[in-house]
Image (cartoon, rainbow, N blue to C red; front, side, top):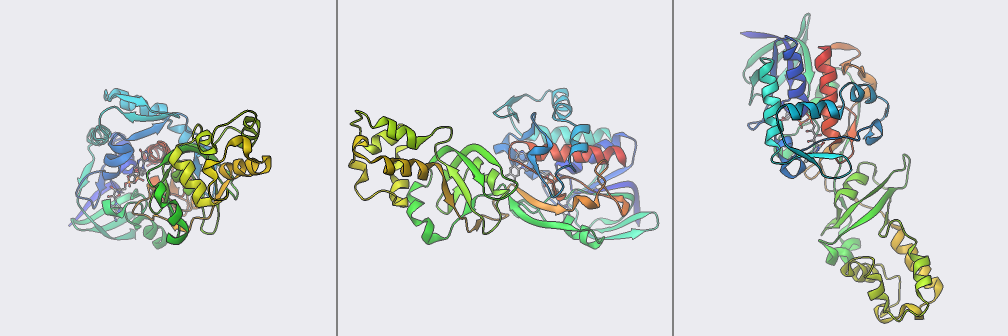
Length: 401
Ligand code: FDA
């Protein structure tokens, strides 16, 4: 027996639930299908369990895409304030952490419940857990072969996200569907992900594991970006918000640059500090940076001769001090890889935006097929931007269905 719906949405995550609820509340008969046993795991674990559900400063500049303009239309048609109104209507308490990032006060579970209730208002039908084995184009739309039997729909929405965190059910389903319908896919890569180094070159920095500092990070190739964020040393390499941000712009073979002391000119400061300064160099540097970082980092880099710690600032040559400042403020590194999809927060790349209508997310060559959310080649920075894209692309689609 084939069950008929106006719309089938595959993937009941952030974007899928939002699109289904909008379409359902417009009176369409919608079915939402997901293969997971537990609903919306990524929302549940997001923001450390408190879901950084949007960023009030969202603009197109906070996204990476082969077409940086593609996301503008959807983002301006459904803004962070629009989602915030929904959050407020459900009485969900929230706070701004920093840099426009809005988090739930209590638990991300409240965002899942909000979306569930919005779906209920639209009488959305559920098939979960339910895997989709095949999609076939028919004269009147699409037919899906699923674990729960055949489903026919006039319009089909693919909202199965990206490949980050396969351990909670992420798959390449959206990319496979795109290829099935002859659509171009921008090469997917893990993004918002720790960067790793080969074991021998990283060995001198291993004692720094657990140390963090606020630094300025930049990439070396266009588009050039800079992030002032925390950096965290790990056993295998570098992590922390700053590294996650720059990782989305990093490509294999490229370098990244770290200024361990942003917003000052350390070299000049050291030279100026020489006059009458009888402090030891390590004590003086420890007034700027964590002592463990100063000591281990300088030993690992071997910029100064052994025994440098004992030297007094006043006894150092200007050239050596300027070099030291330069080294700490433009540390250039060549990561050898990333920690991969298992540790990534998102997938970069995805369905090529040239294939989609920017106002509706419909496939230009298959007007009844839609891709939304992370499956599309629109990747947000860390800080609530990825959920805002999920909401905005879903609403654009939900209103057009
Ligand atoms: P999402 O991944 O939410 O949903 C896809 C759904 O499709 C899932 O329910 C999955 O089970 C289902 N699915 C997959 N393959 C399927 C198949 N073959 N058949 C059927 N169903 C299938 N962003 C942000 O803005 N703020 C934050 O705080 C965080 N925090 C965060 C933490 C961690 C640890 C991660 C991994 C990610 C984040 N993110 C984030 C990113 C954010 O979670 C992500 O961008 C959105 O969830 C994407 O929404 P989608 O609906 O596109 O995919």
